[in-house]
Each structure stands twice: as C-alpha cells, then as structure tokens.
Length: 100
Length: 535
Image (cartoon, rainbow over all chains, first blue to last red):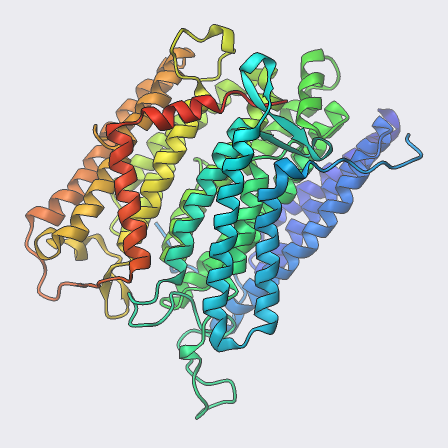
C-alpha cells in the first residue's frame, strides 16, 4: 500500500477541510463548495485504491461520482437561488423560521 | 487488468418494472416540453398514473416468477452484472413503494382543499407573495399557473427508491440515493402557501443531504479500499476472509451508515427531519415520510445483512446505541411539540428507532426457532404498517385549514371531534396505529419487531423500546383527548371537503390500517415468503 499512501493522506486532509468548512461557513454557496470538496476527496481516494488493487472499479466509480456531483450542483444552485431571491441573502443563518 | 470490456447482461424479465418507472418519468419530461400549459396537468397526472399501474402489475408479475435459491430460503436473481438484485425483499419493497407513491400522486393532484388551487407554487422562482404576471404588472398572474414538473419528479424519486433498495453494489446504491434525493429536495421547496418555510426546508434538506452523501462516497471509497470491490457480495467475501486493513472497513462502513441513517432520520442525524416535514408541502411530506423510510431501510438491511452480515458483532453494539437514542430522542422531543407536522416528524423519528430495533434482530436462519418471525420479515411488515398510516395521517392534516393555509398548531385542532367527527376519527385511528394500540396495524408491527429483536438477545433495546412506546402513547392519546373532549375555539379552523383523490387515499389507508391490525396474517406471510436476501 506504500505507493498510494500519500494520495490517501491527501484525500483524508481534503475531506476534513471540506467537512470543517460545511460546519463552520455561513454562506450557502461556500457550504456547498465544501461538500463538492468532500466528494472530490472521495474521488481521489477511489482512484488511489483502484491503483492499489489493480482493478478499474474505483476509477469507474469516480466518473459516476463526478456526474452525480454535477447533477447535485444543478439542483443545489436552483434551491439556493430561490432562497436568495426571496431573502436577498444566501446565509444559512438567516433562514431560521423553522426551529425546535 | 482486462483489455476487453464486456457489457453486463441485462435481465429485462426481472428489471422491467424499474425501466417502466424511469421511462414514465422521461415521458413526463417530454410532456412538459411539448404539451400546452392548459393540458399539462391532466396529461402529466395520467401519464404518472398509468406508469405506476404498469409498475405495480410488473412488480407482481416479477414476484410470481422469481426462481428459488438456497433450497427455498431465498428467491430471486442477481441482475445487471451484480448491480441490481431482484429478490423477495426487493419485490416486496417495490410493491410497497409503488402503493405509497400512488397515494402521493393522488395527494399531489388534489386541488379542492385550497379553493381550486394546486398545492404547489405556480412558479418556483418567484419570491413569496409576488403576484405579477409573466409580462409584468397587469398581465394575468401566476396564481393560476402550476408546476406540473412535480409529477415527473415524483416518478423519478420512486425510480431512485426502487433502485436504492435493490442495489447490489455500493456505487449503484449511491447513484440511486441521489436519484431519489434530488427530486425530493426540489419538491420540498415548492409549497404554494408559506413559501419562505418551504424554501428554507428545501435548503436545509439539500445542504444536509449533500453533506451526508459526501460521507457515503468517502465511506464507499474506504470499503472499496478494504475489499477491492464495491459489490456487496464481494465485500461479504472479503469480510469473511478477514485480514487486510480492518480499520478501513470499520471507518468506511460507519461513514456509509451515517448517510443511510441520515436518510431515515435516526438520532443523532435527525435534525433535518422536523424542519423539512413542517416546511415541505404536506402532500410531499406524506410521500417522503413514508417512501424514503421504506427505501432507505431496504438499503440499510441489504448493506448490513448482505455486505456486513459476518461483521455483525462489530456493528450491532453501535446500532444498539443509535436505536436507543433514536427511540428516546424521538418520543421525548415529541412531547413538547405544538405543531402537528413537527409532532408527526418526531414520532417518525421514534418509529425509525423501532425499525432499527427490528434490524438488530438479525440471526442466522438456523438459529431461528420454529415459527419465529425473522427480523427481515418483521421490518418489512413494520414498514408496510408505518407507510400506510403515515400517508393517511398527513393526508388528514391537509383538510383542517385556516385562511392562510393548513391549521398547523395543535391548539387549533381542539374540539375537532365535536365539529367534524369523521376527520377527527380518521386522525385518531392513524394516531392509535402509530402508537401501537391493539387492533391496529401498528400494534402487530411493533410486536413483531420487538419479538424478533428479543429473540436475537437485544433485551436492553427492547426494554427501552417498550418504555418509549409508553411515552409515545401519552402524547398520541393526549392529542386524541383534546380533539374529542375539549370545546372548539371561537374561530375554529375550517374542515374542507376534499375531492375523491384525497378521500380515497385516506379511506384506503384507514381500511388497510384497521384490516392489518385485525388480520395481519396474510401480509406477515407475504413478508415471510419474501425470504432472505439473494447474494
């Protein structure tokens, strides 16, 4: 596993950055970008493991994840935009009518 | 590595209900593009209705033709190169999902409860409260418009759910998870009334859902790193063989479970549930609360039983904790709720806990005593009782209305039993079923999951489950008491007479709920006949 370890470490670091970003950032767009970072970190891990195992399944999975992430962007930006149009703000803190 | 790529064989005879559903959704998209606006609603709902009917017939036909496997303990086939598994539990869940979706479709098409207006916003991109027409002030307003896209979205969500509970590898599971989630995120944001709440619910659901699917993908990558394959049967082989980097498997499986538990709304991944259930249009809530849980429990069962069946002693203790937290969290938080839909959301969280209790009842089939209910059978039956009662109860909540929309507050329902005994009576029956009172479907469901968990030795969880059921009875019955034994307020909300669409949904749900409580045998047998998962 030695040859792919650096890539796995990098993917873990990227995933953690994305995770922390989702939890701490306030702008919905930035939160969403952090989610994309998590997905791309996973892609890196999938490709690294594919190299390690010597089969193609991980690489194929990475392509699927990319396509799904693109679809997610379409839906996500549409939702964030409707929120922005009605509130003039994309902050996740402002949308707080529903609680408890 | 292989130099040549050979495409997998597609077993059309087993998979055609799935293709019928996706085909229906695509036809819906084409209708949206080409049909004139005035005719769209009728065409769209008919297309979706025909598609669902075909899917239901197809599911039954496929179920009748499933070949026996493993000496009769299981029935079914691994299809599409291992990506989709059509077996007994799959077709049971398919049938259940299609039935629940028919209920959802009827509620989507309802327009009499809101003075002839559809339940969905005319134009999703408009800010709340704006009534300007497409050409600006003075033009005909968007009020009469409607979002007929909701029908293809509903059918796409159904397709994703059917694929989700049938997926034989983690990649298919992930793609299916997104196919079912993305339409639901959009549907949540389309309420005609209380648009701000609806949009907020959509955003919260979307951001948290995307966050959890990030966990799913990374977990999937780690499991792949351990097993060298994404196929669940392949993962099971690797787990049985042992060795390798165990930590990859444990962390990966935990991350996949985070995403799956998020979808069913288990504590501590439940925080979206009340907000989304309250904010979403009630027709969507009814559909989503029932169908998502059915599909996601199908996926949880398959992942844990097929992929990690041999690592049972690694995941069972964690699932004990989650089940206990979910049951207690759900019922304790439900006690203080003042909104009907939030109350039902917390009650659905508690039901997730009861279902997880059933999941813990996994035993090798040889260990089962004669006539004992297997955990799979118990969970499948519980999902049926829960799904039907949930669609019914949310359908009833659409009927009690204030001038600005539904009467959401529990206090507004005071004395409803005196003014409209029929609506209040239906609501009470559904509440009793959710509470698990004998002679309703919920009782048999609860009894079967508790029995199966107790049989597997999960006594502490069962004890907590019984305690939380008792707490749950308190807030369900308290609601019934205020409905029937208190005076209605001066400005009591209006109880509208719905069109046959909603009436039929409520009536069928009511009949099924009572019938399953009195004669649960046939459906229990059917769930038992589903047998084991095919690997």
